[in-house]
Image: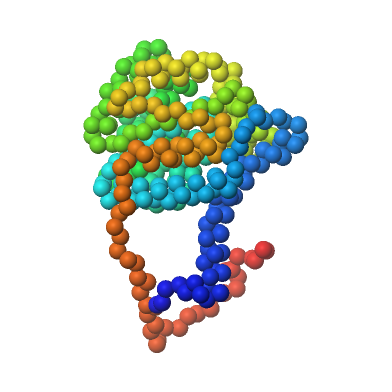
Length: 307
């Protein structure tokens, strides 16, 4: 079968449409982020922000996502193990950043782990035990949307752990992470940082937006009351778990676009990856058998074409 012929107008139009459809996936996500404009028009005031130009944002995002694909290829090729932890206050933009990292990657070797609250059985286990099965194997990238640092944050602030359990966590987590690193895991820890005013605005946006109300849990609302408690908890967490083996990296996240680009750029810098040599892909010819007869699909099986 011949390759695409860009000189064929019909074929060129199809190629352009396919590329546009791919870009539209990201555009849909971005437009969803910007639905807050309607809420601002209704009287809500957003914190002043020097927003990154949309063209610049998309150009850089697609370039960085292309590099992420190369990074994933390298991780698979070299059988590396990569673990990325995303932490931060509620509504700091962790989920949106994770989506942009994974959007173009192969889900067979890139997983997102977002564990629910521990079960009764898990509460009786070694604290790190429920996280261990989700650690990356050779050739895998794993992204933790929150992690064992729940103990240093929400569990501490909301009284879900005792002072002794908290102290044990702080004493053991550096050794635990050091073991992960020595076992060959590339561990990267991000804290997404937003201001008090920005979190208040994002919470209000979620309250007024029926498509985003599911993101607001009673625990999220309670976090507004405990803003200063969470700040103190974060400061001690940094002080006691920022080590040479597993340092923390703070992402300024008030501007979501800049936060995503800066985080991805930094993530790429953590591995000295190279482009993996690949064999040229050739589409085999279609086999046609003279005895094959295609049967029509019954009309009642088709989805109604409303659009």
